[in-house]
Length: 241
Image 1 (cartoon, one colour):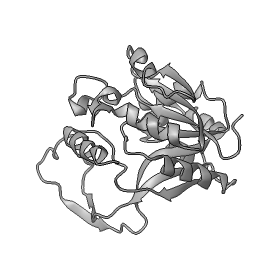
Image 2: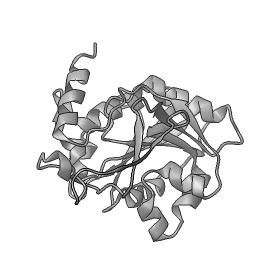
Image 3: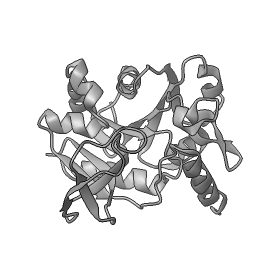
Image 4: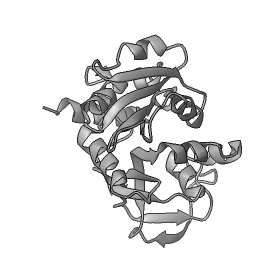
C-alpha cells in the first residue's frame, strides 16, 4: 500500500517515435547527451513523493530500459503494448499502491517539484479522482468548419474558420497525471472503442464520472514529437545547471 502523500510512477515509454524520424524508439533517442527516458527517470527518482517506478518499455528494448533505471528506488520494467492505453494497462498490473502518477516519457523537462505538487494536490482533495498538469492556452483558438486531419493540411487547401472560441476556460493537458489507482483501473476497463478514442487517462476517468483537477504547469514542460521539438527541448535541457 502507498503511504500518504506517496505515489507509484508509471512512465509510458513504448512509443515508436515515427514522427520523430529517429529510427529508434522515442524514449531511447538521445537528447542533450542521454536518452529522453533517462531525464524523466531522474526527475521521478528525485521526487520525494515517488516510492516506486514502473516503465512500459518498447518491445525488444526492455534490456536497454533496465540499464536506465535509478538505483535506490524500487523500479520495474514491463513490456509496453501497441497503443498507449495498452502500455498503461500493462504497467498498472505491476502497481501496488493507492496512488499512481502517469507520465509520457516524451516529456523529459518534467521536474521533481511538479511531480510532488501534483501528488500533494490530490492528497489535499480526497473527493477528487485525479489531478493533471496543464498549462493555460495563450494562442487565439479558431474552430474550423471541418475536422482537422491528423497530419498535413486540409484536403481542400486552407480551412475555413467557423468561429473564434473563448480561451478563458481552456487548458492544454500535459503529464504527469496523478490518479487514485483503483479509479484509474476501473476507467481503463472501458470498452476498446472508448479507450482508443481517449488521448489521455484523464479523459477516461472523466467519462467514468470522476472529478479531475487541473494543476498549473510550466509551458516549458514540452512534449517531444517532431525533430523541431527534439532540438528545442535539447537546448532547454543543455541550459539546466
